[in-house]
Image 1 (cartoon, rainbow, N blue to C red):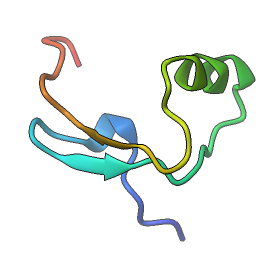
Image 2 (cartoon, rainbow, N blue to C red):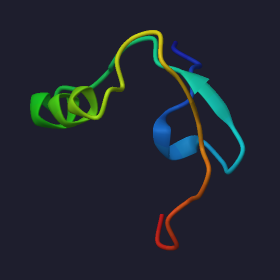
Image 3 (cartoon, rainbow, N blue to C red):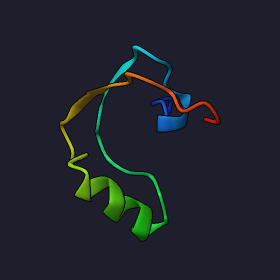
Length: 52
């Protein structure tokens, strides 16, 4: 079982490294890649949208 967090599970201030994509939705994956979220990128959650 994969215990890596999903984007939706990250909280404000959390940091995460992109290690891959576990989605069957190629359109969603394409959007993430177009934003520069490629393997090896480390990101930090600065804000969380009011409605999630």
